[in-house]
Image (cartoon, rainbow, N blue to C red; front, side):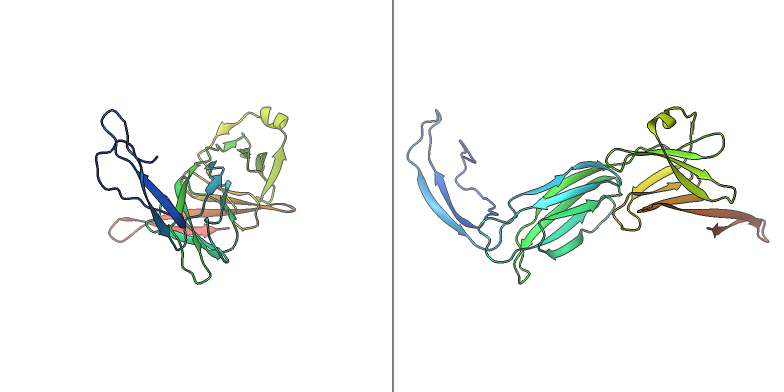
Length: 259
C-alpha cells in the first residue's frame, strides 16, 4: 500500500523497474470500511535503475577509499554497461569518471572534504541508458596535526584505515628530508609542540599507496612524501619572496621557487 485514505481521484507515480506492474484501488468511507478493489496493469519497457547502489564506507576522511557497488537492473537482458558520475562539493558540473564499464564495483579515493553525490546508470550495448541511482558519501577533513621537536624535526600520525603509522620527518647534514617510522612507545615518549603545517592525504603518484603533503602556514614550504614499495621519497619545495620598491615607492613582491 503506497497511498491510503486519500481524497484525490488521480495519482502520478514514477516507475523505474521494467516489467508489468498491477495497481489496485478501493473506495472507503470515513470510518475506513472499504469496498472491492479494481485493478489495472501497466507494462514498463526500456532500461530500469540498478537494483542496489552502495558505498562502503559512506563516511570517510580525506585520503581514504570508498568502494561503490551496484547490481544489474531487474528484467535486464543482454550485456549491461554502466556509467558513473559524481557531484563534487566544489564543482558546478557533474563529472562522468567512468563510462560503459562492465564492472559492478569501483574503488574511489577522495581527497576533497565535503559531501560527494555519486550516480550510476545501466546502459545497453548501443549506449541507451536507464535512470540514474544516487547515493551520498561524506568526507571529513583529516584533522591530523603536525608537530615539531626542538631540533626542527616534524611529526605526524597517519590515521587508522590509511596504513596507520607514527611518522618522523628529519633533515640530515645535507639538508635533505628523510622519513622514520616510530613505534607507539617512541611516539608517547616525545615532547612536541604543534606547528602551523596543514596536511593533505592522497595517492599522488597513482600507485595505490598512501602519500601525504605538508604545507607551511605561509605556504612557503611544501613537503611531499610519496610512499613507495621500498620506502619513502621526499620532495621539498621552498618559495622565497623578494621585496623591492618601484620608482613610485610602491613595494613589489616577486616569488622564486627552489626544490
